[in-house]
Picture (cartoon, rainbow, N blue to C red):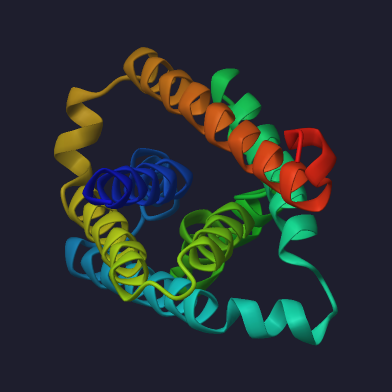
Length: 215
């Protein structure tokens, strides 16, 4: 029992942390705030992370209701979410910014935007479709277990805090991590995300078609 809890806690933390991708969010933050003074950049980092936290918490607590409202089964959502995460993972392996996170158009338009905290930083860079999908799927697997739900919420908080910490110290991070190092880290995280995505799909297919599990 304790082993299952530890496994679920590690799965929750790794899944959410990888899909939020604090390093990728930080590099995007740097590119979008080059014209701002330090105080303004600090405010943008704080607000974008706060909005992202609210969004992920909202979907964690109300995601199941939203699926029921649209008549979507969790099995279908898990399979679809797994495919989405697989695509994001593949793009990370090839060192590309996922279009589910930030498109070229959004990045270009945000250059002239007065407030980039909500869009594109909070949505879709930090709390994008992949993070929302992962949160909803994990919360469904934690149904009926207060400790598992707590693990997921804590994992969200940790991921957002890490993102804020890196954004607040973005100048130091950028000076230490070049494009070569970023691509290497991104590819490693992409491989882990692909494995998690495949596991989501397998779990969804097994639940939707019990015959596949031999039962």
